[in-house]
Amino acid sequence: MPSALAPLPDDIPLTRITCTINGEQVVADAPVDCTLLTFLRDIVGLTGTKGACLEGECGSCTVLIDGKPVTSCLMLAGQVNGRTITTVEGLADGDALDVIQEKFVETGAAQCGYCTPGLIMSARALLNDNPSISESELLTALEGNICRCTGYASIVEAVRRAHRELKS
Amino acid sequence: MFHQPVDIETALRLRGERPDATVVNGCTDVSVARNHGMLHPREVIDLSRIASLKTIEHDGDNLLIGAGATFAQLGKCHLKALREAALSVAGPAIRNQGTIGGNLVTASPAGDGCVALLAMGGDVELASAARGSRWVDVRAFFLGYRKTELAGDELVTRVRVPYNPVTRWYKIGKRGAVNISLVCAAVARRTDGSFGLAYGCVGPIPLFAPKAERVLARGPLTDALIAEAADVVESEVAPIDDHRGSADYRRAMCRTLTTRLLADIAKNGDQGDADAFSAGAAA
Image (cartoon, rainbow over all chains, first blue to last red; front, side, top):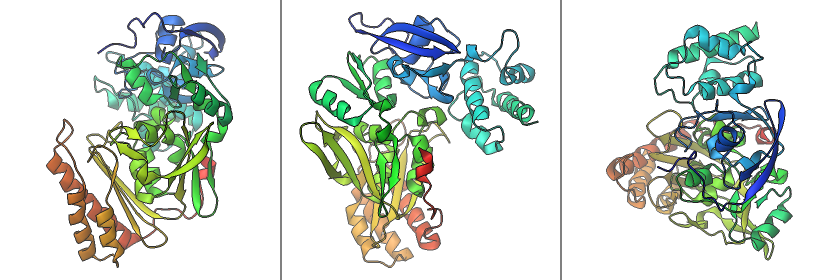
């Protein structure tokens, strides 16, 4: 299957994109048909966001736009013009990890680690939206993210612990 | 060129002037085609900045849904079938992206939103700069496999569905989430007592079952009448064997879902279709 990360046809016109990524203003040109995922990884150079299925099955490319989770492989870069994007690189403050990252480390919630950025962003959106959530809301928020290593128990436990810490 | 009109008039003018441009809103279906190398748009009209396309309003008799309303928005709708269909689509991230207008235009036989709309009945508003707007019965919108009534210079702008039907929805798939329907079904009892029955993944387009609906119109909704209608549904759907399931299984499930959903309406009535209008809060 051709990859979203494969070279694009070279005659696609460029479009100028101005947006805020992890608190910094970014101005860059991207081909009209460039996905947000490719824009972040190959043009902006933020490779924390992963691409895997490229068809909305796995959630590994999840980022936040204006605080809401989206799958970055399923939208065009031009669509984020003027928007505020948060990727996994935007969570830690220097060496100080975000509470969700901290709990992922604590519970050993990463095996191969490929799904981790997407899961952390889905969890971040959930806890941004509402610090007080039910177990079923927690599971629903993560339902779009697949862990191919099947490490769900420790992933869900990490998000539960982050939720408890934020609530207290 | 990447066009981001902020009002519908500009979008319609662009659509008329740029017949080769790719129209996107949530862009989830177009992106899959693009990622598979089937499409490399050189010009895009992005409808996602048009605020008036995102509203969900109530005019007393109808719910008026902007074509840009997302599945996340519809997931707060008071109509049970539409709400549950919306929440059965993909996961939370994609529900923030995908729209009801996109679901209609993609016209996949697995379009969960389309199936819910077909059961409730309603109209789709198609607009062009040249000819203004027209309302098309949602049951006349799907013409064939991924073919619709939408003309090349038109955009879907709104969907109008009755406000108060009693509705039910069920999707069968392989997972609890990020789940493409193997079969899905929606049923509705409208305020005039007539019934709507619709099914996904059992034909080239989202299907409805007019013969079974005529059986139900004889009323009242007894077990015997439900069984008769479910029999007729089996003859009205046209499933195929594919990697998700067999035609026989799908046909059998159409019977089962029809029976269960109608029995639930007979027993529980409008329980589940909330009285309070909550869709407005969803925008």
